[in-house]
Length: 157
Image 1 (cartoon, rainbow, N blue to C red):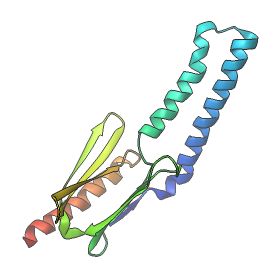
Image 2 (image 1 turned 60 degrees about the vertical axis):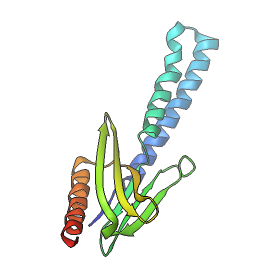
Image 3 (image 1 turned 120 degrees about the vertical axis):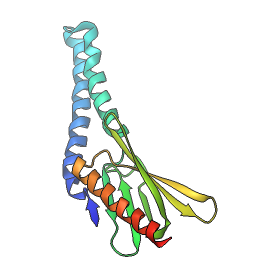
């Protein structure tokens, strides 16, 4: 099974550009308000704070692009940000038989996928992926596919 939200990259780029423009307009508006108009008073700080909070929330939400491929004998996970210098892209590929378990965590608007795989050195390793930008159906399809792999692994043992 293949799962990818790469086709939504233009939408994420648009949102990113919109938030950056909103922040720039807020800064210009704040400077004009502070030194020229002086109409809003203390509320003028919201012209910077509100767009800044939205931008920080957008980036804290995690990497936007998630790709999963379970075709063949290996599982392949890729997770990257649309802004390349903000975070290092993740790319992991391992045989299906190494998958031990997985868990998804939902905290408000942040979703994470934790994959536990068997390893020769430590016994097991946990891989973390950010899946906040996947739809509910995509998350359910991902869970279904991973459960299928785990079930097949248990039958082999």
